[in-house]
Image (tube, rainbow, N blue to C red; front, side):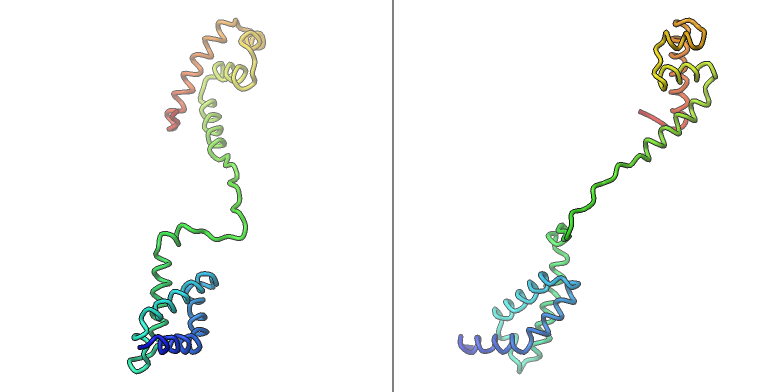
Length: 170
């Protein structure tokens, strides 16, 4: 074919099939107008590069165009570039802090504390959870500061064992 004949064939091809090809590409891309335009443009570019394929005596030009458009859309969908792109009209929401782990840990510690003796539980509650000093805890419980320290040591060991039995590790 001569250059003039190719130009006429491309103009006729565009005039006869562009609207139908656009509608088809729009459906193939799920309504994404930009991607549909890319599919149509690439399809027509391939038709321009292979004008003999579009010779009407050998078959339907529209069928060839639709087949090429479908393959382009499938290749685009399969490409890594398409999978990594996310199109959105607003930024994603910020992740809300999840206090589930903290609540679960609190529940496990409370349950483990219930397994301790009353003397050990009292010392831990005063010194660790209520922030009393050893001297203040001793005065409150009516025992010596050395006893508070000793009970605290053994209470922490017992608490650690109780938590390990529940599957809690560092």
